[in-house]
Image 1: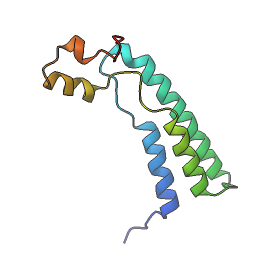
Image 2 (image 1 turned 30 degrees about the vertical axis):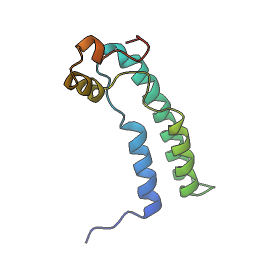
Image 3 (image 1 turned 90 degrees about the horizontal axis):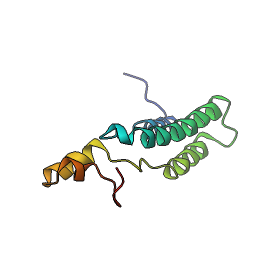
Image 4 (image 1 turned 90 degrees about the vertical axis):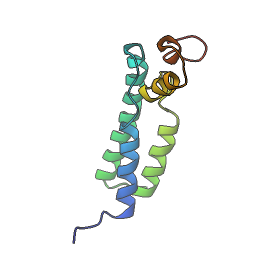
Length: 106
């Protein structure tokens, strides 16, 4: 039988995965926004992991909650994802319409 990962560690690992596993941009124009969001999220994940490896003075559960709060401040936004573009194309929009941000920016 494989060892089971304790729930607090599993929750932290899931939060780290959520931090890093954001959707790719549909166009090169969205790369800067994607990278900015990913860098912020990766920084917070690194801080959380370092805190836990240093003994997590406030506890793993607290660190995980704190990480999730920071991730909520940096949602994958400001660019059109491939999935969003695909859905817009399936709905009959043109490529230009599918990859345009609301308000006309792309």
